[in-house]
Amino acid sequence: MTNQIEDIRFTNPNDRNAWNQVDGDEELKRLKEGIYFGQLDPNWRQKAQQVIDEQRDVMVGLEDGQRNKSLPTEILIFGGGAVILLTVLVIYKYKNK
Image (cartoon, rainbow, N blue to C red):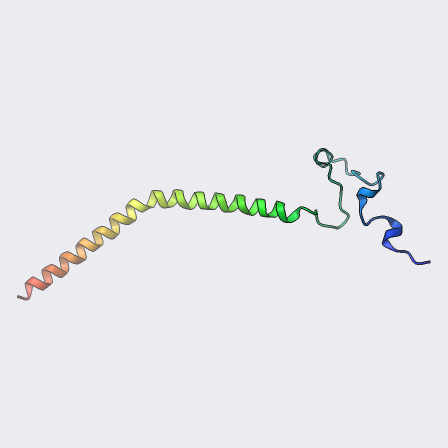
């Protein structure tokens, strides 16, 4: 006789009521999720993607806020630099005539 994992019945702990919800976590009981012995939660990709999406939305919001705050200053610096450069070029051009 060989011992297989199916004989121990740890392949799906939800099949045995004695092992289901042994950790006593109320949140897991509320969601009716079982525990997974050394396995990933079956919904780990959706949960990870939700966290990634939330972080991306927060980062985009921060970047937009910072851009809206610094854009007038950047426009002023660029416009002022362009006016100064054109003024220097006009002065240089008419000075040589």
